[in-house]
Image (cartoon, rainbow, N blue to C red; front, top):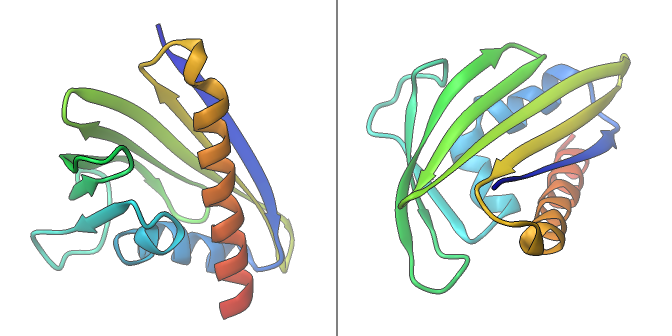
Length: 141
């Protein structure tokens, strides 16, 4: 059984700025919008398909080590990843749509290997993260 959750926000910044913040600088910025996650790379190479990011998730108390492999990276359009937190595998994708020259719709979708009883909790966490992303990008622009 799995649960798919999708959240969207309209951000008052050009798509290139939103993509740069979310995708190009994912390792640095993800812990800013979700402080339960630590990320690090074993190299200084820019992110792209095949990049494996090391991660530590402390959301549920005991930290869980894992990885995030970038499986899709299309400039200003999409970033996809497969996340392995211990035995849990989550598939995630961010889609970037330019609505106007200075406005972007960011949609984040994740598929979690859990039953439907977790849907509301996961959706609330994703919505919080998205609101933090929007706030951070708009404040730094």
